[in-house]
Image 1: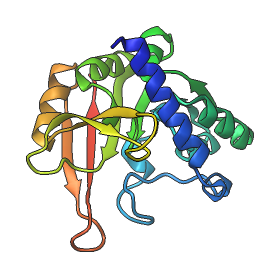
Image 2 (image 1 turned 135 degrees about the vertical axis):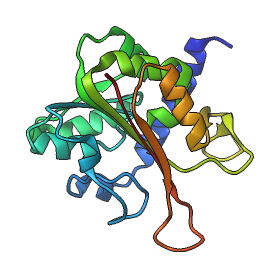
Image 3 (image 1 turned 45 degrees about the vertical axis):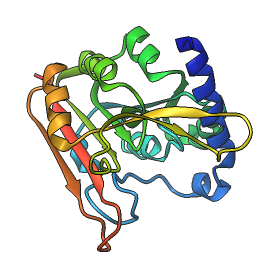
Length: 220
């Protein structure tokens, strides 16, 4: 199966997700949080004080909009044309900019650099880090930071994992996610041009619930 075919399948998958996103999610105010729990964990301060920032796999664009409201040159890239069309209109008044495209193609072809690149349950979770992380390092300004979050790996289920979306009947829509231990992420970052890095799993606010892996790394 060709890479282009895989991209088309993923685009359809994320378009389906975009079309199922409830209107009240976009009607809410801009918000920036790394975990899946409202009012929990660190916030935008993990990015430092960037003048420019890029979110890879920006989804609803609410984090991009918040940064733009604070005067940051904020850009979001997402594979879904349906999602980008929705969020570009919703957050136009904030000055945020949204680009439709695959994250690898965008990072490879764009000429812009950023003080911060980040992903909140986004493209870093769904893209081969061996290909993605070196491209991110090249698009960061000296001293720039990469921060990303996603659910921690299920114990014993590490590495790339295929997953179907939208049920198990009808047209097959699939993607891949990349789940690693904090130690493995640190090794991947070190080999991709990053210097200081830290990774930890934040416990959920309620015992027994799923935590959140948060990773932060800087380039020299």
